[in-house]
Amino acid sequence: MQRKVFCGLIAILLLALILPASLHASVVGRFTLITGQVDVLKGGKVPGIPAKVQDGVETGDVIRTKARSKAQLSMVDASVITLAPESRLAIADYQYNPAKEERRAVVRLFRGLMNTVVNRIIKTEEPDFIVETHTATVGVRGTNFYTLVGPSFTATYLTHGTLGVSTNLPTLPALLLLHSMQFTQIPLGKQPFLAQTLTPEMLAMLERLMDTGVSGSGFGYGSPAPGTAGQYQYPFTLPGSPDQKLLQQTIPPVLQPQQQTLPQVHTAPVTPSQPLIP
Image (tube, rainbow, N blue to C red):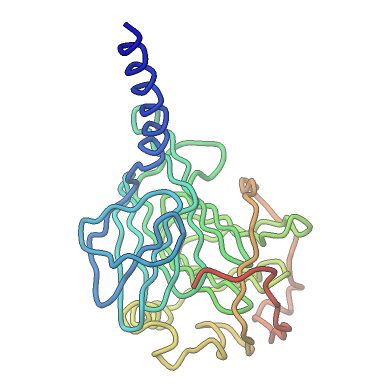
C-alpha cells in the first residue's frame, strides 16, 4: 500500500514538472523557406541551432539570418514573415484562437529588414499584431509592409492596408496612420515623420534588399534609409520597448507643413545597458 502511494506521488511530481514545459513549448509558426545559413536561439539562448524547412518556432525564440541568407515563416494565423540577410527577429508573444477570433502577436525586429504579410483581419478595438523595434511600435491591420531597422531609426514602408506607427517612448505618444503606398521614418527618441509616398522605385529597391541584405547592397548602416535623408551612426541598440495602445484616428502634426520633406537627422550613439542578442 505504501509503495502504491509512493509511486502515485512520484507520478504527480513528474506531471507537475512535465506539463508546464509542454504548455510553453507550443509551435506558433514553421519555416517554409530557408536560403543559406539561418539559426534559431531557442528561448533566446545561445548557442544557435541551424534551422531547417518545416522546423517549428515558439514564443521566445530568436531567428537569425546570416550574410546572403534568407528565411520565411508561416505562422499559425496564416501571417507570413520573411527576413532578409543579416536580420534578427524575436517572437516575443504569439497567441491565436481561431474559434474565438482572438490573436495576440508581438514580434521584435532587432536589426535588418523584414517583410510582413498579415492575411487575416480580426475585428478588435486595438491592433492585435504588433511589430516592435528600438525606436517604434507598429500596430497592424491586415496588411503587407516592410520594416527596416538601422542604428538610430526605423523605417516602415506600407504597400497595402493600414498601419498605426508610434515611437516606443511613452513621453511621445503621438500616432501616425499609414495607408497603402506610404512610408515613414521614426528616429531614435523622436516622433514619426509625416507620411510620404512610397514610389515604385523605392518598392523595387526594398524587394532587392530582401535578397541581398542591407549591408551587401550599397545601403549600409552608415547610409540613410531608402527615400530618406541623413546619415546614421553605429552602434546598433535595442532598448526594451513597451506595448502601446495604437488605436487613434488623428495626431498633431509632427512636422511643420513646410518641413514635410524628411530632414537630416543627427543622432549620437547610444550605449546599451546590457549586451544585445548576438
